[in-house]
Amino acid sequence: MSASGGSMPPPPNPTAYFPAPRITLPVGLDILRTYSGAFICLEILFGALVWILVAASRVPLPLLQGWVMFVSVTACFLSILFLGVFLFSYTHRVAVDWNQMDFLFHAATFVFYFGAFLLQAATTSLHNYRCPSNATVLLSGQDYNISIAASIFAFATTICYGCSTALALRRWKL
Image 1 (spheres, helix red, strand yellow):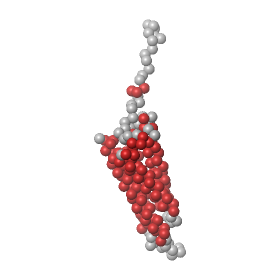
Image 2: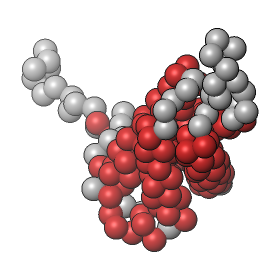
Image 3: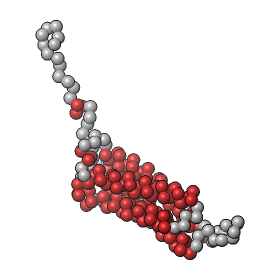
Image 4: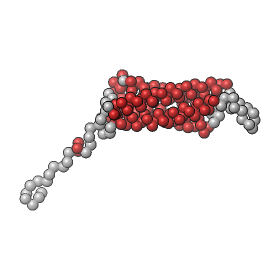
């Protein structure tokens, strides 16, 4: 109470400090009916295929293919998490600009996946390279075929992340 006998002023309105989340994508199962939802599902599918194919090969160059494996596993799990946020309507519980978050996530993942694709393609291009120590071919026939498939799916995943980035930028800036 103040000296004049009046009461204390009311506390500030919390909505003034925490604006409503800004999002233009639908939540729930409706996310799967959009182009963005379809691209996220393709990112998960193709990313898991890259992960499986690299793991199935003999991994002749662990430094290169280790990065490909790290990017594919991390991007796959983060895409599942990102899709889960929209599927289970968690976007209304966290007050962030989801359009900006969508763009930043997909742009960063696009850059990492593009690098992983280049490293996988570089590994595939070493098919006829012979190790100087024992004169054996770096990639056997089966490993070469697996590496080609992994390169193709890494490229497809990179394209999906690029399309998602373009759609997210359009939603965020328009």
